[in-house]
Amino acid sequence: MTINIEQDVASILSKLDQKLDKLDSKIDQKLDKLDSKIDRLENKIEEKLDRFENKIEQRFDKVDERLNKLEISQADLKGDIKSLETKTEQLDKRIGNIEFANRGILVGLVVVVLGGFAMFFRMASKL
Image (cartoon, rainbow, N blue to C red; front, side):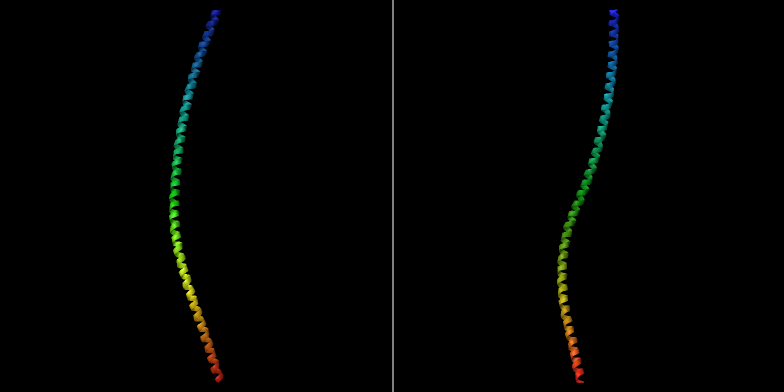
């Protein structure tokens, strides 16, 4: 009976050992599949990140170009503004001279008109 029990225990242990080996191999297969899936996902993520990074770099380069163009345009505008300021100052001086001349002409006209009235009244009083 003890031999029978030992054989039964040995048989059960060998079957259990076989099942554990099968289970271990299945677990190894699943782990290998999982590792390969993780590697593929990691590669996909890296590719997408690289593409995204490239897009961002391109956009930053475009923004940098536009900024440089704006800086150049701003410098040009500053030069244009300074030339316009000098032109407006010159025009202001011209207008000031013209206003002074117009005042002189207006004063002259008023004097002539008053002189004309004075002569008219002088002639009218002699009549």
